[in-house]
Length: 391
Ligand code: HMG
Image 1: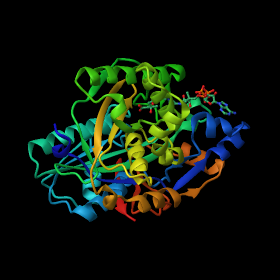
Image 2: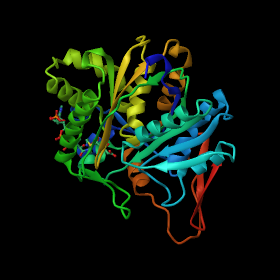
Image 3: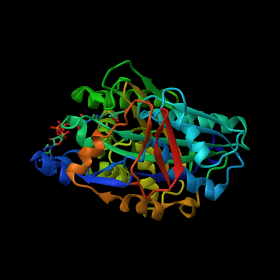
Image 4: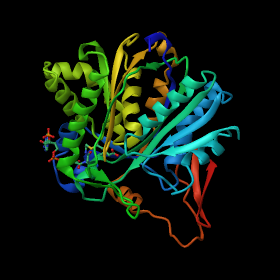
């Protein structure tokens, strides 16, 4: 599809949690050198949800400014991608639909395939818009990443949501064909229904991600994708920001290109600012990389961006997008920095308390302490039903 007629991302808005735990605090509790986190994995802090926050409150907070700017008249579909589902049957997006007051003439659905879900939602949305260019699709990708206290994964927790408005005539990024696809049945990271924390095979997960980079690139080039040299920047899924560097170095080496630090920094450097502060937000992570890239001062007009979406288990996709002329006028850079900067820092004991918080499962009335200063909150659980309200 020619660059100037492809559908794509018309608006992009991010939201995160009330609280933040720094890696300095985590390292001090563990009695280790914080450089392991700052330099070793490229993380400085992680978002921690208040007890009255979850994927619904973050998703609604991310989407509300999009609706405020564009209205909802053309939105007939809401797709919520997550692996931190709050119900086994009802889509989290239905709660968001209600909080945002969207029309009843809307289809709402939830998608899951680990961190890849956000890209699946984007691709499905592009298909719908292609079928009827008058329609827009609201894609929300949001997660709370949670590992067991003291586990290897603990330092890579985080939480955030991103809302993308997909339209036929996008103001930010046009998404191109083809895509390179890769699926392999592996157990590198997973979360059984009975656990609230994810399990990970430490060494396998990084190796599986790198194998998927090769697999998607092979399929992408076989389908006539752009050569590597045409891309101005690369957005990778970032479970921790150093993973983007590992992945891009792997791709460059695989293709026989120079992979010097300066080459990596030029391709990846502007995509990591938000993820380094928020931690792993699973489905949202790749698109937080895009938000950081677009919000950076460099003008990307007309440039091709490479996207590598990876979801453990595993499914991955490589695709390209081109940045639309005039995109800077549509950015939300100040609001994004405000969402990250306004979080309240917590100490280790408070983090631990929040980590261990779980609702009783007796079906009684369980109101939640009012903590969030965000626009929406989880008021509590009543009769096994989650009750949400504007704050
Ligand atoms: P670990 O045991 O905490 O750390 O595991 P490590 O010992 O492997 O060290 C990490 C890096 O820090 C190393 O660098 C060390 O050398 C360095 P590398 O060899 O990687 O270049 N280091 C230091 N650097 C400077 N100063 C120091 C220092 N000490 C050590 N003092 C691991 C790290 C990421 C494996 C762990 O945190 C983990 O298991 N995380 C969860 C799994 C994960 O994120 N996997 C990534 C790929 S899978 C994926 O992306 C999918 C996912 O998002 C889920 C989904 O799809 O839904 C996870």
